[in-house]
Amino acid sequence: MIRFLTAGESHGKALTTIIEGFPSNLIITTDYLNFHLKRRQAGYGRGLRMQIETDTVEILSGVRFQKTLGSPISLLIKNKDWENWIEKMSPEKKNNKVEKITIPRPGHADLVGISKYNFDDIRNSIERSSARETAARVAAGTIARRLLEEFGISIGSFVESIGGVYPKENFRENLFGNSLPKNFKGWDLSEKSDKSEVRVLDKDHEEKIINKIKQAKKKGDTLGGTFYAVATGVPVGLGSFVHYDTKLDAEIAQSIMSINAVKAVSIGTGFEAAEKFGSESHDEIIMDKELLIRRTNRAGGIEGGISTGMPIIVRGAMKPIATLMSPIESVDLKTMKAVDARRERSDFVAVPACAVIAESMLAWSIAKYLLLKFGGDSIEESIENFRNYSGKLYKRIKKNFSR
Ligand SMILES: Cc1cc2nc3c(=O)[nH]c(=O)nc-3n(C[C@H](O)[C@H](O)[C@H](O)COP(=O)(O)O)c2cc1C
Image 1 (cartoon, rainbow, N blue to C red):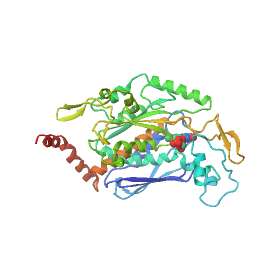
Image 2: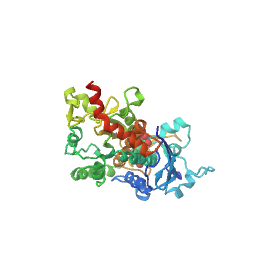
Image 3: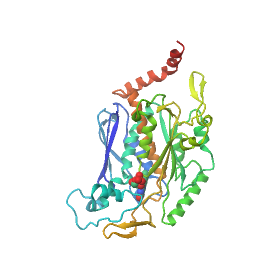
Image 4: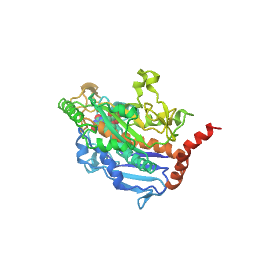
């Protein structure tokens, strides 16, 4: 079973990740990791920090001559602004001149953090609850993505809406109607959306969203939005219906929901399916040459907690950023008096980045179940296990049922 842990504070010295359980001989390069880390930092509406800091990763262990060794992989992402934060964030002796933060921001983890951990300075809570941690997750998820590529699995994402501004074009028909081109890959979505400042699929939509963000900025306000993450090439049979904690849809929902500020996740047509007739919701099973396929993909590639072989389609909703330049009401914990919530360096919108993080989390969840089914000690052994299975699937079904 693969797993990863991240460590590091938002303005600490660095973020680190330890990743365990990957087979040996998988090719990993720092360039590949940095490419995806950079994608997380982009997007119109991000704060100053994303403009001044470019994340780069250093591989500390588990990889030799660009190939995994089967041992734990550890990665380091330095916080480039550390020099300016040493006084405020030193792990050594306390500096009494550092002012404490006493006004919690509604919608952030400030008040719950100090309540739970018994802090007298909100800084102690902000530092780990910040979405800075997701840089380390993208690094781990990118290793999972690299693994999936070896199996022909491809992941991409795009932003569907920001601040309630949706596209005119009904791309959902393509996704759920199974009318995507035959050689379509999940990554095709990212290739297109990465060209847009807000990671949407059409120019007209982009313009409308940027206008909406400009309005929000002018008011000192923030916005959230919705996004899709899609995985293609996922074989039939990942996950299981036998236990609540072995279902692939439940695993993916947990992964996506764990991203900061994500408040809803659905698979396939999700909430919409609840409003439809069964005949409009389910995916007919048809024969296509020697394959059993689905006429549509409203289930979003998972039935009974098991992958169907169709693209896995996940939708997420991110709430608006909690730090407002025109703040709403809070209480100063020092005086217990009503005040405006605290302002600080912040993003106005981070939905484009959130979608990139969702790609990494989706990659991680699929890699976890892929390796549970096919995992060997080396990548070669894992691929061989996979080939034996996928090549024989149709024949196996036919043989079993014609007895
Ligand atoms: C990529 C990304 C960037 C974020 N940037 C900010 C930010 O600059 N300011 C802020 O207040 N919240 C930001 N957030 C959201 C907070 O991290 C999140 O609201 C907070 O951790 C509380 O968790 P919750 O919203 O899941 O309850 C960001 C989230 C993501 C995914």
